[in-house]
Length: 217
Image (cartoon, one colour):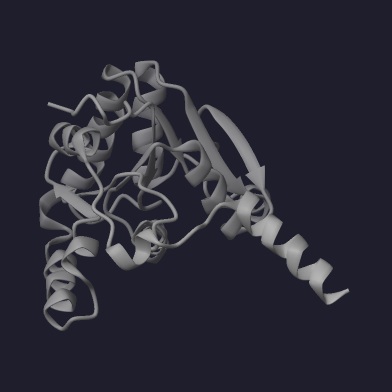
């Protein structure tokens, strides 16, 4: 059961491949995740389009009654290579802006199987969590053991002392959508003491910038 101190997740951003992948379980799991989001009245944020796992999860969520927001760089939209976005489409200028917009609209993140783009997105969001920029829960849906070797590698990185044990706990993993969402809902972040001292407040940074400018004049 989720702790009463943990905010309820209303919007989940899903990172996944624009290809269907080799195993039939990949598409089936994407479709199932979309239906579970709708059943739990959780809205979907994703990278737009209608191809592969991205299309499967978005169509299932949309047909189930979830609000769906697809965030698409203009170059991809105009290139007509990702298909028509399901639900509402928000076009942005760059890939970096795309990730920032998806981040701002999400309470949590799930990665289904995918390629370089999916890995970049999940690790980008995870590195922000490590730096205490945010404390939103992040999960890997380990469909058909897709992420087994990645999870083993992360354990190896901890063993080699390039990653702390607490930072390793940032990435939750589960085989099913139901289990993963339950774990995201009950997730309580543990921040390294060194990172907890970091202040990422835009307001505070702007104050410091104004002070620095005034001192230099």
